[in-house]
Amino acid sequence: MQKVVRGTLFSEEQIEHRVGELARAISDDYRDKGNVVLIGILKGSFIFLADLSRKLDIDRTVEFIAVSSYQGATSGAVRMIMDVRGDIAGRHVLIVEDIVDTGNTLKYLIQILKSRNPASIKTCALLHKAEATVADVPIDYVGFPIGNEWVVGYGLDYDEFGRTLPYIGVIDPD
Ligand code: IMP
Ligand code: MG
Image (cartoon, rainbow, N blue to C red; front, side, top):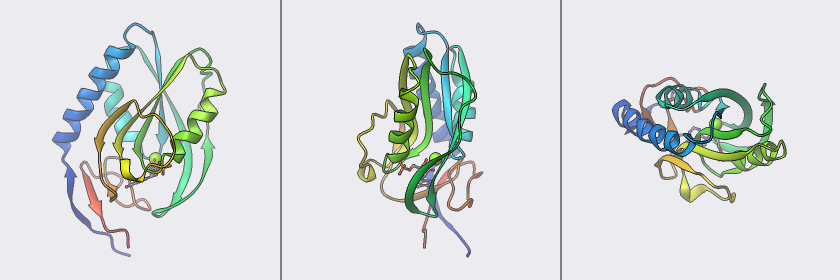
């Protein structure tokens, strides 16, 4: 099965610029709160988190959670595969997602993490498919809203295709 990237949605330059803006907004909001725990959702957020975390100018810690929610482009049940290592009780948590589609993954994670009594939980997603979101979840920081297309690159994949492209492109998932 040969996959082709149909076109560039966001170039490397556009992504870098927007990640910088997000980092400034997040830094300003957390400056007086002390250390923020950035929780990246694997695998998709690994590049976004790497760039975002290096652009912050506040105290921060990095953690990862791995979930499995998709087989190809078909939505399935959310399942945690790997949990954070550190205790988040009393900590300011920022969940970092590559993309929010239905919002089910984020809703599931917020529920789990809230039960561990963090000082606060906020969410940051590089991309948001607003029309596709059905779960009632707050997304505090959004990089770019996009339409209902399947995108790859900058961490995002289609069955592992396209994950390490430096830009974000659209594919036909048939
Ligand atoms: P949700 O639970 O439906 O919000 O799905 C979130 C997850 O689905 C994201 O973290 C991605 O891993 C994956 N996903 C949704 N849309 C896309 C896309 O267009 N490209 C790549 N992955 C996607
Ligand atoms: Mg993901």
